[in-house]
View 1: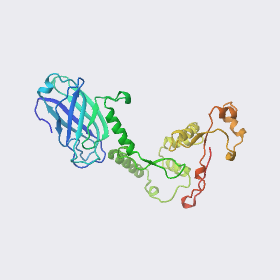
View 2 (view 1 turned 135 degrees about the vertical axis):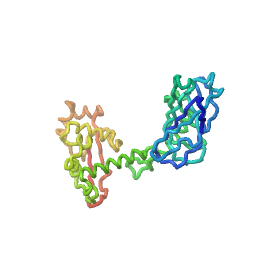
View 3 (view 1 turned 90 degrees about the vertical axis):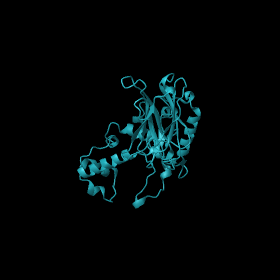
View 4 (view 1 turned 60 degrees about the vertical axis):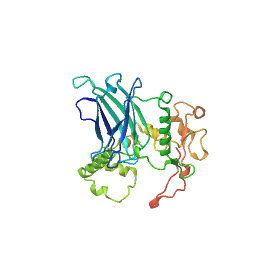
Length: 317
């Protein structure tokens, strides 16, 4: 687990994010490298990244002074580590490792090295991290590890399609893309505090449906709750309305439905005169030739059945 000697060469601090993990941390083995390629012996850190009840954890391990680090071994530049299969299964997320160089003694200058990890750590696989560095693909000193991680991430993001023409969806959200426990409970706590302080408990537990978007927005105003910025800007009276509408098409929940308009569809029902005030002095044909007119056609929604007897539109915009 590390030395308790007063002659300490390095302190190793591991930080674990508050994702779901088991009750016991794994055995981790670690090498340190300096810029000249000198490598330390392998250090076994038992129960590294042990997670307690309060979420994120910083476990500290000490490495004693030894002949290998007294002369010739520079500032820690890279680490290599791997874990065994004990303690936890695959649900263990390492955020970062911090190493403090204490070879100058209590009164000397202590050097810090920060190693970002930010990934799930699997058994019997070696991981590398460089001090405060990230690399472009062409410059990555560990290309094989990059390819292995990209392959793993592609496998985690499996897509499927519910029907022809519908947008692709994730089969499931990878664990490292979900809220951490701390963030999730903070959201729940904030929600409960607002409900109680604003007297919303009766309406919040109601099973009645909102009749319109405006009905939902009125709850913010009725109970003096600040409206979300998206609600404020979405109002047709807001100056940013057109900007928000365009942003929803290009970077909203489904940015793949917008298409370049090469000709006004016959069934669009829009007269050219209606468009002239919005063409900034251009003719309609010039706009079409310049590929500056875009259209969203939700014809695929026509005939879709809805719950509670509601009707679904299939708009064009």
